[in-house]
Image (cartoon, rainbow, N blue to C red; front, side, top):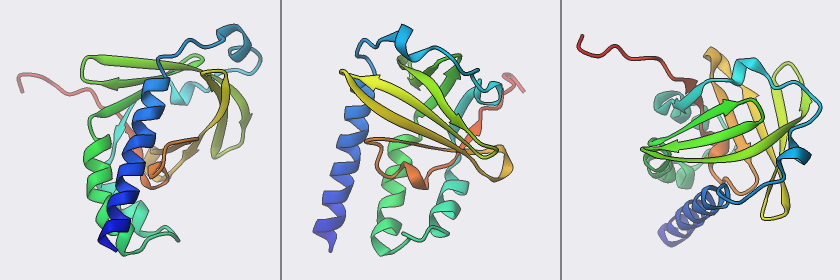
Length: 161
């Protein structure tokens, strides 16, 4: 069982790294950034909400012993990453490094935004779902484990206080 859990963790990390490294690829911006209006409520920086993510995962139909063991590693891996949505782009921020992909809104409901993106001439789907407390859940092709994570709007912190 431990071997299976470690294999799953390595697969998760590999998929995450593959997604982020692919984000540096050149995209067909003209093709992706047309038509629908970009949702203003996403236009901010989003950071991982660790406590809410753990509670959210526990309520999932997929919650089991393996997921319980993997969640601390998943949270530790994704905690340094922040996401910023800017008109037609999703920017991944980790320390001083920025990577971006062009995204195009395909569908919008009251609770979900579905975007299209392209990496290495392959189309992908990005789904952003609204969650309680103004949080969002981000899911995309190749981002295993993200279905358990919730992201909060970054709050500006006062310095020197």
